[in-house]
Length: 395
Image 1 (cartoon, helix red, strand yellow):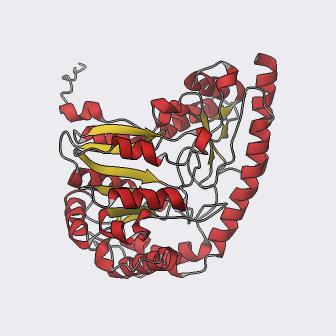
Image 2: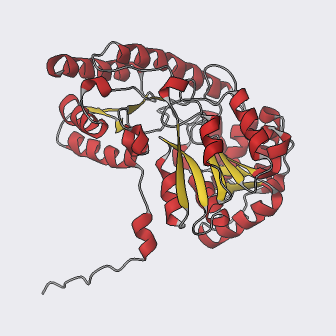
């Protein structure tokens, strides 16, 4: 006799959680592949390279060497030291290991920081379009999500005036992301310096998501933490997934003042316990070993960027600016006459190209699509050919 499940009664906060559409599209694309349809994957933000051999070897050696047990909630001392040294080298900021918290992926830093700092009703400024989990987590803790725009007209750099106009006495946190997902925009030194000057005397923190910091094609990476007046007010979010093609290893970290790091560690203890020890040993090798693979990946992404930008600009109805960082393009598709969601669905079902609609990154992403160029030149060109063929027949 079949049993009937009782209704599922969830806490009210669960209704405030959003999602990350890239994984939803991946599932739909894989379902089409299971039916025998060839799909070109330009939806997921994951390097298609293998993790460099020296890192894999370090992880395997760590497994065989017994690094399979619990470690400290804040991370192994040797990895926290390596992260501190790496930040000092690349940003010119003196960082102590006690200011580093290692987590299984970068998202826990985002999650923990928002949980630790934002009370119900507090305001949080975040980029729109932007990584969807920012808004999701703000709503989850009962904060008030205040979007600020990233305009194509300004090459997807931040509009400092807009941010400053939206900062109030209720603002607890400002989220920055550079290089930016989904647009590939990079914040310039002048904009960051102005923000640092104006925010320094405010009672707030800045969460600076710098996960793509090694993937910049023009200019330099600037962190707001580099400005002395913002040193104690900034939390850097970074990790190993994008730079070292280690998405499945699940390892990120936050850099922040020591007293806040202690509280973030407490949240880690209560949730994740710790990050896998053998992956952390591999992380030490990633930071301290040869960086040749990082440089090679960046140059290959640069080559792919040229192919996809030039190709999209040849397609009727598409207009694409060249991104300065990360591995995404964010073409304007308003001239197609279709909504972002409708066009993304059409390209998946009719052209066999998986991408994301702009509104997957917030309401202000309407009129755009996001394509990841973390795929081979051959596959990117095949995708472009399919989209162009569809456009010429349809538009």
